[in-house]
Image (cartoon, rainbow over all chains, first blue to last red; front, side, top):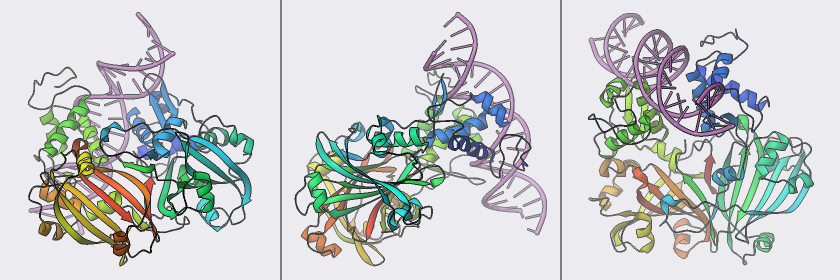
Length: 261
Length: 261
DNA sequence: CCCAATTTGTTCGTATGTATA
DNA sequence: TTATACATACGAACAAATTGG
């Protein structure tokens, strides 16, 4: 029913703008409010289209965009599902460290290696100005600060400092963090209902601190890559601040600006 | 006419697979072969659909994807055009150096600053193993090697070493390069018919060489960001190898992994 | 300023193909 | 085999932006 001038005459969708965008917002709303949970199937297209009182083509266009944004996945013959964070997705979308290579490979796209993760420390602290600004907290709000060391082929390569809000991740404990069976983002999603959709990153070159030297086994004065990553959820809400120190003697930070979309 | 079992019964499209993908390939072919040149308008949708003997919806789906891949642009009421490289696009898609910022801005997306480019040298050389491998040349093939210095707010920040094939950019001269009125990628496109579609980049941290110190005005032993970029055209053909040394004392290398599409 | 022609943008509904269980 | 669900293709109707008279 909702043509553009809509006064919420139906139990379905409303709001200004183009119809398929209204549908998209409604689908997002249901996911954010956990009416549909990660891994769960949506109603089939005809049912959903009928319920939202739009044509099946309009519904498909809204779903198309959410699939493209990694929020939903479709499987022909099975259904449409809220996307789950998996190790594959982590490798494909979020882990950008790879061993050096020359350019002779090109289209090959060597499948990146999943890192071995070692948790060095897990602490409850109070946020400083930087983390509060990034995570939209007040200074002094409780946070968790986690240090991880990532190794590739048995060699330590990355030192991560992860900061998350304690109030957002209510019930987080060192035990739950250490004993997760999947990626960290999968833990956020399945245990805390927080889905990381994309990240903003800034890289710079720094000199190794003594602590970094110790954990990464690099020599004095070695240059390191420092990557600041802010992970964002629905509505561009920041949920994690991560600082990675990367030993780039044998590894690169890779960005494949392909379809960008 | 072309249902999937098609034996090129028409003067239009053919080939295996899904119809809209056949259409997309045909459109790409016409652009690559310069039947349609950058900046030029395509025939309107109904005309094109009729000529290719597909429905307007199928044509639109093919065009949709090419728009998403930055190959075409559509303007409602005007037409569909082969996309031109502009400074805006350069800033938006390819220039990733920005002044330091804290995370308190977020959604603001400070419009990046267009750099002031100074050409330090332009030489004709023979390709070594690395550039030959990257650009799919034979070792010893003629290449152009260009050094640029990029400044932001009057301060030198990036040192670029650009390598392109002399046979691919036939007719390139230092004069034409220096006196271009737009971006380098715009020059490639308008003067040589070579369109850069996307890039693959690898970043690492290095120590400043004496020459880099001199050109960027950094102190001894300063860490620099080294970014290797391979620019690709249609069919993933490599067309430019660029090595950037970035003084990251005041600036970052930014990757906003947003819709990634 | 307005009108009309042109072109893309959105929405609708239908029919048929293909993958899954 | 059958039923279900998504995938593709088609074409019609109307909306919105642009341009030129």
